[in-house]
Image (cartoon, rainbow, N blue to C red):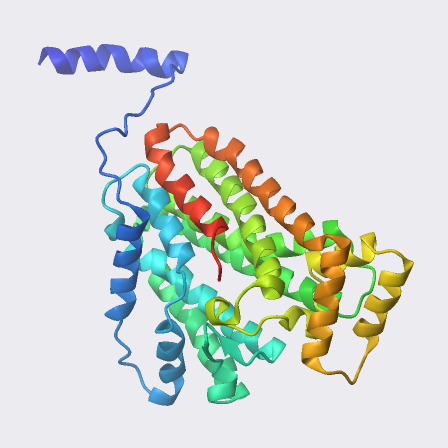
Length: 353
């Protein structure tokens, strides 16, 4: 009774003077990233494909069975685990992001006419373009189906973030396509494009995880910004690996961005920093219509090395990773709890594929 009376007396004072309450998360069991990834993999291993026709869902099963890094659901569950110790309770919503991500890849591969994804034939190559479009559309719907299986009290907020993110990714994809017809794309424009196309989904994953765990609003916003910076570093690393990666490890052909003249950080800065002779040779390869693929990749890679684009890319990746630290530092959770998220982000930056 006395405890109840004391609480009744104290709470009005806390509310009146807005005394900050430091939430204690020390007793929450923090899973490792590998333990969380195992839960994600188990979800997809046991995912039932009972709907018909089989011809529509076989490509979806094929895509999701390829594995992949499954970074987005892992990030969402780690963010949730910062505040609560039952991340498996939001497993369906977390895996919705992986389904959505693979939907974007399926359509992206079709638009790029890519032959390989994770070392396997792309859907439009294994089946056909129409199948890739329709199966991809169904994956988008399935992503929403699994996302809405979250706490009903958080559903509106979660769907607002998820839908806005989906729209932003479409914006980014269109900018990427628009850049194909432009020769004057700036680095700033490119960074904004990859923020929309890649970063916002990582940021969305982390923020939704925090929201579903009842994280303070400031924490959720700082975690979102953390995800944005990590996402920029991640995409720039993808640009780098497309030139300097190992095909067997990377899971797709190296030099695809070079052969298609894709406006990447690498190409944009090569033109910006080349001398007259280097720029003339680079222009020749970009304008070439009939060329040997291996010769073009070798020549442009050599120019990148001469100009120092490899070092510039590595420095820019490190810059965005370092920028992410100020946002994670602002999250009001103990350093020992945040360490798992930072270690996972560091591992993302050390990837070879």
